[in-house]
Figure: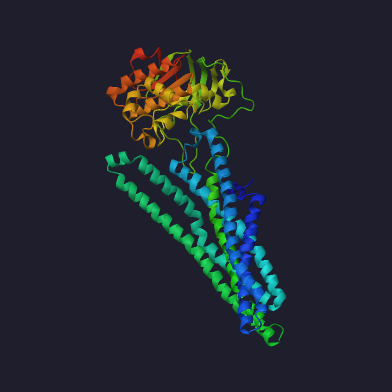
Length: 572
């Protein structure tokens, strides 16, 4: 069985065609550094002999050329490498999102929002270090190091062998020390960052409740404790990188000493001249500097592996039981825009038992997460307004999620005579729309919160639908469609959020509309007026309406009432 983390690391590496320019430019940059130092050493030593300037012109031009080339190649390496890496990260994020879509929202209920966001952003960002700090520098450095040692071998084989031994021992020691220092950091840094992100998001989202119950201080202390642990892990990571770099710098000194020890007899024997001796003295420093990329690449790869594992596990590999699966050959949805007949016969459904991303516990959450439907029989006629009553945990939300195919079912659920399980779930959701009890509003203006339901809608159409849900005057008072609604609708009331959500659903022209607890966030004194406006507006659009509520509802607003208890409905 393949390792998901290793597979994710492999996918983080761009194709050879995209990565090759960065590798070549890296070779040019590192090679220029070594040749620059060699030319400079030879030029200084040769100039001390005071030869005619003609004998120095080539070296002078070489010093200028390689000094400029080192910077130019370095810039081009960064440019091409980051371009290839960022393109690859975009593909990874798109893949994670595509894997998430078929099982959202109920299939990812186990993952905390902040932690999922951190995996989608920070952990994917960490994967850029695989090509940028591991693969490309390692390949470039390996080629340059081989070429440099071979070049030294042509000048003085003894010095080349001495430098090669120092490099091998030094890199081995640096990798060993780094591994010991990174054992804790590589396991904890990415998970701690995810826990910290999740704690901050949860604290901010629940801040009003925490302040009301005088629990905000405890939440901040928890965030501070996580922040301190994450800072300690980050310092350990930085210390390991610094130790490796220091070790390689020390190895550079040892390599110079070894090269000198091997070159002195050659100089004394007349086998090499003074300028060549100067080259053999200084080039090992540049070689050691290039070799520093090896332990840094190993460090980056080890740390990226933890993020790769988190990205790979952000979405389950297989669709959890209880989540709909796309049919191999989806059937055609009911034709026409009129509301279809909705028929449920012997429907059973339950929430998927999910495992948290840390491998423990259940991912169940919410009022109805433990509820299940058992043998539900229900028929909803075209254009009918149906009220589904029941207490908390009775199965109302389970029924709503079955109707929009967020949850799978057993039995028969037919839309216009077509079995829903044979349809593409997206086709079902184009027919049956859901307005949840806590509708999601984006931190944008009113226009942007409506127009994604129908991208071709004009401002006049938006204002018309706002008029139908009773928000036209409110929008005009706030300056029109450019009025902001705040993060998650912080600048609007619960009733206004429900009306905006209904306006959005009406723009989408759902033939069947499910309103799940639309007055849950509304003052009881205004609940009846809101329900009347919502049901009237939905009815005028010609949609069938399924109103789910545990609170009393005026019987005149609906055509029929059914009561759900313990996941059961009375037989038709």
